[in-house]
Image (cartoon, rainbow, N blue to C red; front, side, top):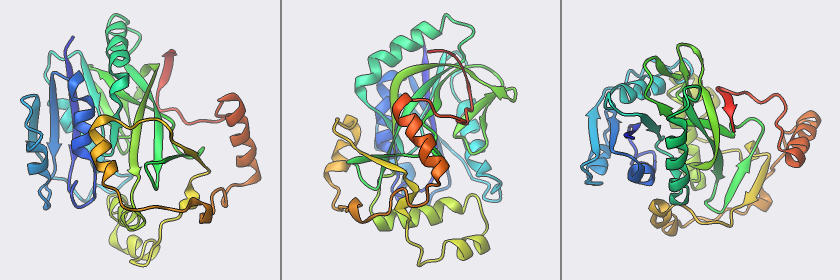
Length: 293
């Protein structure tokens, strides 16, 4: 069984993306790893080179910054990386620059890949998500956030990134997946307050023009922690590759002063309550078709 990892990245230093930790968190499961390196101006390519692994293949890319319709440029770069994996690879393991996989899941992931490889009806593996929020000590929940996504794909011709590359489609249809009991740790929102302000402004530049940014996200913009409906204290360990970064953090957020749930309608509170009790997310958007659990 051959596994290719793949990702895309640009200006990881400037935007504080833990791309090295992301790659290292799944590198032991991969036979090769494709990094589509965008036109950065902050030393991102050197950062990837410093991983110093024979498995890693860096491909230089220039982003089309005019592709702002729904973050389309992210999908284009993802597709470039996916297209560059070895033709004889059985699996393609996708990781984004602010994600990581705990090493405790590696044996299970390998086992699930071996199992699904013999099942033609399974085209990908679906992971659960923990969205760390404002801190490495808490993860957030909201009905507006995705709680599952495809991160392992069979190397099938016709698979393309969907919309802004949160997920994938095969010939414009949903991919058939097995839900596995492994988590992707998402660290995109685990930043100090000023870092979150910068993230929102920079991220939205790939969705909107400068006039929209200045109108909706001026320099004085302050991140709204109320986007999380619920915060849960994280009591487990983080993936080994990111622990050094976490140990170096020097900010602390008093969430007792943040207005969580302030924007929740009565209907959403009821629906969230049902999910908390039963695990059933009514009306959940699914960019995949679960064929096995």
